[in-house]
Length: 284
Image 1 (tube, rainbow, N blue to C red):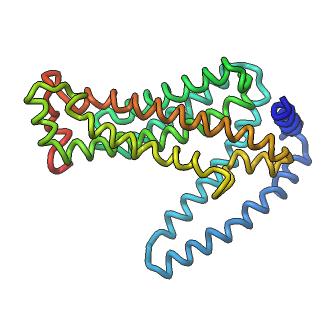
Image 2: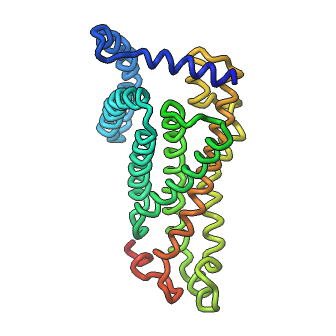
């Protein structure tokens, strides 16, 4: 309850921001001076890249410029959505995040047929089921100020895990295609023939989240917790929220990665339980 009250106070302050107020843009410009000053760190990284002949300077500049512009724009978009009381805006924002995440994860596994669709379905299922449970258990209220940030964290995490799952599973099956084909020839189903590859893939994809949960608070303070503390919340309240965040990350990523393996099988095998030659050809 104390955590929710603290968060509500923060949201009320944000809700008082009015872009139509003449002083708003002056305050906004003044507030952006610190992010601009922080670009000095990126300049240092670019200088090091140049000195080491890594040729990453352009990518760094483009990445940080995009991040700066995207976050600035999304701030205004979220301000508008937070001022609305229509659940449709929540669903629209959520589906947009899932769509972008599915496309990005699918791009990481280009050799997987219908990879973007598989990633989209996996991320949608994993995050929506987790979010539904959080709302039903009254962990968070179903309002834009809570659901959109929480969904963003889950979708981003599920995107990474799903991309790794598809790419690694394709690589493992391709590398051990002789073993898989032998198992299929002996009467195994696609799931039975790729059981070891699936297990190894899921362990690799999910291990970072599990390791992060093991060391959270000992090595680093996570973003959600740090943001609350810097925003004025007590460390105890910040810890409570961070525990919820870690739980939902593991839940959503596990559902997404496991479903992803199931959706990959129709793309990897024919209806006759044979490996799709084009998917695992040597030049792939």
